[in-house]
Image (cartoon, rainbow, N blue to C red):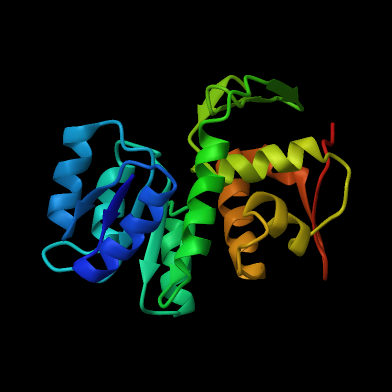
Length: 220
């Protein structure tokens, strides 16, 4: 893992909690150092990234890395502005945590992401012209590969596994973002909007249930 924050105290706090769980942790004190380190190491499994930093902020770091990698990114910010949160998800951020936060919750979310990323599942599901390969983390729609972020892939997997089932936003949050995510409906709605867009015509399979949530239903 890599922890990126210009505050050494914050880096040490997060690093100590992660090392206590036997994770190897690299540190970077600014955005430029983070990008250089990421491309040097090539085997970083997850990035915990602060937004406000000198030289290159977290948004810029995320844009740089997302051009080449889908590595899971947890964004830390001192702001709780809705626009910041939505921008983070637009850039492909997997989790979003506002400071101050509980290091235990941060570690729990990191572990949940890594469990899903590193799972030995090699299940391939095909439905309605969609081929979802969990082992390869690949989605093919009508013969064409579709690039999804980590969370978009997880969301589509959950929808497909629960075809025809009306899913509340709370249930989706609990299962896709795991139980300790203190998010709200905007998080899911933003991801569903992007997922539908990337799926093209197949995006119509994701039906909105007004006042409740969503249902994945294949229509011929």
